[in-house]
Length: 275
Ligand SMILES: NC(=O)c1ccc[n+]([C@@H]2O[C@H](COP(=O)([O-])OP(=O)(O)OC[C@H]3O[C@@H](n4cnc5c(N)ncnc54)[C@H](O)[C@@H]3O)[C@@H](O)[C@H]2O)c1
Image 1: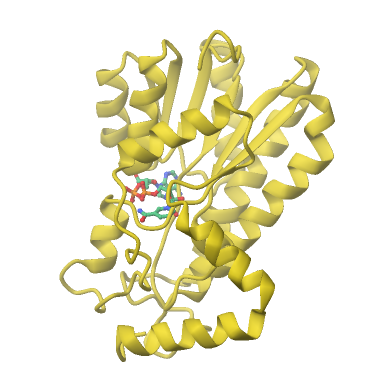
Image 2: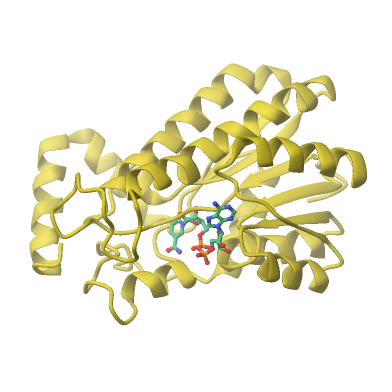
C-alpha cells in the first residue's frame, strides 16, 4: 500500500485489540504512520508502542471528542490519508427478545442506543469531520468495519444486525455521493473473527451460540482480515469480504427473501433455545 496509494498517515479506531490492532500492525509494516484510537488507553498505547505509532484514548461515540482528536492528529501528526472506523460493540439480544433494551452479554443501560452510537454514528462523525479536509486535498480513504451481519443477519442480535445494516447503508451513500471527489470508501464485512468480541460471545456466562452461527464457515484470524483489508483497499474495492461464502448467501437472499428468512429460522432452531 503506502507510496502507490499515497497513504502516509492512517488512523484506526478500536485499534487497541482484535481486527483494529492487526490492521495497525499491518499498515505500519508498509511504512505508514499509524494513529491508534481506543476507549481502552492502555491497549491503544501498547499497540502504538509496538509500531512506533501514536495513541489516543477517544470514545468514538462522542462527536466532540472525535472532532478534537481528528483536529489534533491533523495538527500534530499530519494530514489523515486513511481513516479506519473499526471500533464496534456487540451485546446479544436481551432475554425478552429482539426489541429489548438490555443485552445478554453484558450489563448495559440500553444496548440499542450504545450500538447505534458506536456502530453507526461514529462512522458519521468521522466522515463529517474528514470529508472537507480530504476533498480539499483531492481525496482520501474511509475504511469502515461493518460485518457480514450488515447484509445478512446475526441470529440472536437485533441491535447488532440493524446497526450494521445502517453502517453499510451509510457507507454506500458516501461512496455514491463523494466518489467523484476522490473519496474511496471500503467496507469490511467478515463473519467470525478470533477476537475478544467472539470470546465475549462464546465465553463463560454468555448464552450458547450467541454469535448466531456466524462461525459456520470458519473463524478468521485478525491478521487474515487485516491482509484482506490492505488487498481490498489497494484494489479500490468497496466490499471487502474475508469469508467469500457470504457473497453466495447475499445472492441467495436477494433471489428469494422469503426462502432466506425460512432458512434463517431453520438455522436458528438448530442453534437452540438461546436464540
Ligand atoms: N470478531 C468478529 O467476529 C467480527 C465479525 C464481523 C465484524 N466485526 C467487527 O469488527 C470490528 C472490530 O471488532 P473486534 O472483533 O476486533 O473486537 P474487539 O472487541 O477485539 O475490539 C474492539 C475494540 O474497539 C474498542 N471500542 C469499543 N467501543 C469503543 C468506543 N466507544 N470508542 C473507542 N473504542 C471503542 C474496544 O476497546 C476494543 O479495543 C467491530 O466493528 C466489529 O463489529 C467483528
